[in-house]
Length: 580
Image 1: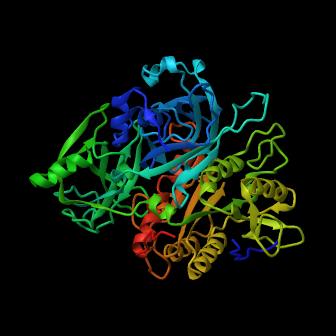
Image 2 (image 1 turned 120 degrees about the vertical axis):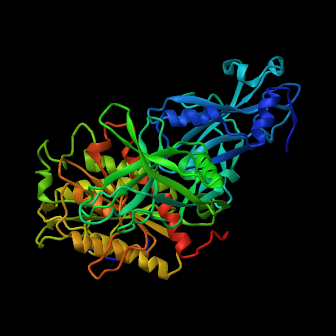
Image 3 (image 1 turned 60 degrees about the horizontal axis):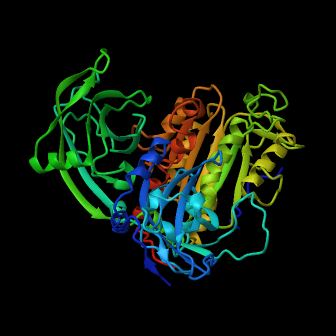
């Protein structure tokens, strides 16, 4: 096993009379509520943009004897278990082997999920062409070809266009060799996704939660997902000793909250350095409600939940909206289209507290049946999302807290065993190197984060100096309480100026309170030993036990803030999504 190194190698036909009204409304960009509900009902509630997909084709098979084919596109969402759910049908284009369909497919793009779609093209029989497209029985139409892709593959293209080779259905034997033509898909982000709202909040007559001083209030804004679970999307700074605070502006986008009418919970809490903040009061309002409060100049009373089920006490404390303005901002997808990439890195905890890897009760146990352990699951779940945003798919991978063969304990060693480079090929490369390392190191300790964070920061710093359009994402998977808390804070504060975010997954049953302090989701930004404050929040922490049986997945919980952290970095550095 080597030591950590800072390598950076790193033509349209006539349209049949099929569902004309639907085709027109969708072409104008009307939100597809059915698709949104379908996605939300399956837990896809993170930061998203509304995307319109347009379709055209070329060189389709001609299945008609006296005329050309009359093609229609049908789109299915493909689940992890390979089940298909139909989500869209185009209109029918008459007499064309190179159709350009007018009806758009509007859907929600969710960064934190892998959205796989199957596209099938059919030749609609003449006798059915006056029927509404949703009434057509597909087994009565002639199949022309199909193709599959992930939505991320489209929106990461600089042109936001992908050309897919149409093929015969999976599992159907080819009787003769036929060309099936090509399907061209183009994505456009809707204008609503680009609107950012600047809000200035003020409170009056807050209750004091401290014995010898006034409260130190801050606000956390959370959206409510379909299952009723609040997920934080933004927060203010902490104002010391202040019962009538006016906070700095918050910036909320439709991407973050879902829509202008989506319910938001705004919590006002008294900051405590031990992480146990005291709730002062809260309100539930949408962006539209907040805009009305601003226009009227009125305040809304905070309330505090009481012991009675569903009951709350109305307080004299009030929340005011002193400013509410909407502007069009550059979006995450615009940066991707201009050539920016997300580069994935991983660091794995090899300390002895994980248990003997050869025993089934170890967190590192490799199950011969193929069942993934917690470390493997975190790698796969996060990696399968992020891999689409990295063109070369070469990922730095490290271990820490172990003793490589004939070496002292290392708090950052290359997972692949090399002494000169840390990168591996793809997610499978990480998995293979992880399994190999388990049998080539001795688990030791203690648990230190500082060295791997500094190694990741060095790669990000060198990439920045070279003018690279890369933003790095380090995944740390650990089972224990860190013993270098202040050194880790120092490393994070320093890294907050770099194109880097850090995701931490806690596995096992340890007390992860210190990780929540690093996350800084509900309090002050991190401060280094020299008194320097982090320029932005770059950490997201999730304890696997808290989400593995819940409605929100590990990936959702981890990646919810990543696009916002990316955009915050770009805006702080005034970096624009200039086209390539």
